[in-house]
Length: 623
Image (cartoon, rainbow, N blue to C red):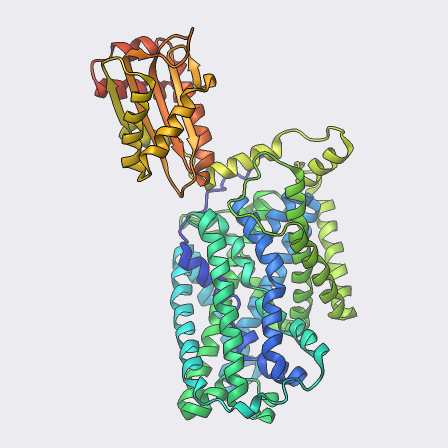
């Protein structure tokens, strides 16, 4: 498939803290500042347990997305996972659903800013409230257009301030709790606890949307899963503790009837100042959700534009490294629904679409695992596979049917519209392999696929693991080269290399010695007469090292085999495996240069040896 000519690469500028703040900011809004009072009316004090159960309901999708995102850290998140597992038709539906649901919820968060301002200033009209939302939407659009780094920094500042305020609320409020307010624990039976958990589950839906900006995350193998899990743990704890304190602070009647329960709780121990501060925190929470929502949702049209499921201009990347047309289109859609559409009905439909997407994501993981693709190599593996995914699929299906008939009808129409778009706009433009075809191939035994998908995954791994030729050349320029002039026995040679490696890798010398001795006994290590690669993956974290040895006299490793004059010793840890495999391939190509062995033996010193290697590398790159 030809990619659009103006499609540039997104910049990797988001670190672990930015990932954490984007995921956290997407969760903390109405679910914490508005819903507790409504949820309390449904089940009473046991609403605390409902929030805890709701946080556990997200775990299957949390684990599935963490694995898929580390295997495929690409823009578009849900869309990309669904497309590459179940094909472009399902990918079209998934992409539209992801974009529509997140953009709608972001518009709802923008309206929430105006709504909270209206609570403090009752003189504001509905149109004033909408105009406030539109102004904030424009502000976030400008921030996002200037680059993901600016959007990420903005999110860090906002979320950090919000969390500090909430922590103070929990600590101070705890000393003002009235224990009598926790009785009776439940007023509507055990069933109401689970029903309310489904009601507040919407509070956690934004957590995994950070995967849509995975392509812009530094060290995605580490930062994506760690950032998501930290956000889930911190925000879940905040939800449960804030609700616990609020229940203990407010009278039952006050809590049941309030649309700003946290602010009312702060008023108990801080008076009007507390009310204002927590009201400002609520506005801050809606701002963080809106900023994270626009940042994440704008990546879906861009990813679909790259794959030609939408017009190519959606994939256009600006000089700032941002998808300019996708951001503007998403922002325009949000402004339109703020001003002209029934947002409450749209958000309920969006919630149903999110549950549908969660089912698709868990199915995608199962399909990816069962396809047995060679280059599907996530750095994080979901535990308890496939049972956790099956439980998630069943649980989300039950929640969908709890949403009611009208949202189901809208979702059915939405899916039909997505298939029609694919049928008439995209089907004749593209054909690509997807994992489900590989699963069918395994079941039927009939060959239906080539190597296109595996090759795409290999390229993704190269990008993810920073497998660049420049990195390899930099290592060749700085790695240690040892020149051995006298004859050495294999065991002495092993000690020499083990000592050098131990210093550079900070690993036990004896362990490395035993490893090298074991490698020397493998006759497959010789790639050319007199040239050998000794390589292995060790059990450690984020380490890679090459040591090159020239032995003029040669070292006899095996009987009836010529002595070895050139050793390339390569040691790597598991997360560097892709770069490790490419490095071995590149070393073989260097050794294949004409007269490499003769030049190697004739070199006067280690400086000349390095020049020979770099010269062979440059010639290899030209051809």
